[in-house]
Length: 295
Image 1 (cartoon, rainbow, N blue to C red):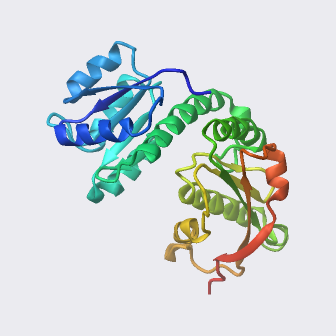
Image 2 (image 1 turned 90 degrees about the vertical axis):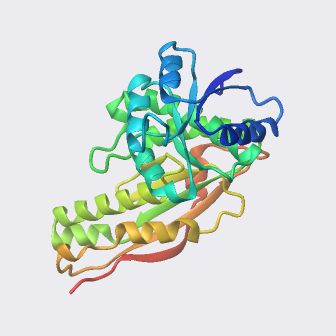
């Protein structure tokens, strides 16, 4: 659950950008966020050390620190506080690297809108808290892929359903099944089968990085919860997935192809159901030849 009052710290040296974020947050009344702005990393770290901050909105380019170093220093100061990166259009790649290193999300300056800003801040707080609980328990993780296992997905997923109920916004469950993995294991060996599992898992984690909830829910079955999905089209993630899973030239010849069957189900807060029900409703709708035969 989201705390009644969340203390957010905005670390930004540009007064115009600070004002724009404050105005965007003001567009949504009664958000429960208390926003404080500081104009340097030193002041921000000092505030974090006081232990009165629940969320950080961080500009990576500050007078005394630049790029990922800014994020690293901020996280080291308060590892238990979630961080959202604020980036310019030309800094998206840098922001993505920060997310891979542990930031909860990133927002593009100049594109801030009240409801999307509040939603991103809410999700960051809830995800960070729940993930901290789950990450401390190895039994929530799948050792083969590093993703959550089915138990972790169900536990974290139910929390996200409650968040969807609070905000009144739908979310999507996207499933992915690797076709004929047993045949690959039988004909080419378990090592090849494990490689396929790991490649698909890595591509899914990249394609659905914003959801922060991707799991291996069965032997060859994966699922992801997507937190803001009205009319969510398949091609939003297919391009990213296809690029991430594409074979590298160094991998050499491969005598088999791999296809993935995708499924989609949508959670509507007006008609609530469980995560298990969403998984069952998610049936294969389309296929993707994600690892074509090589050689």
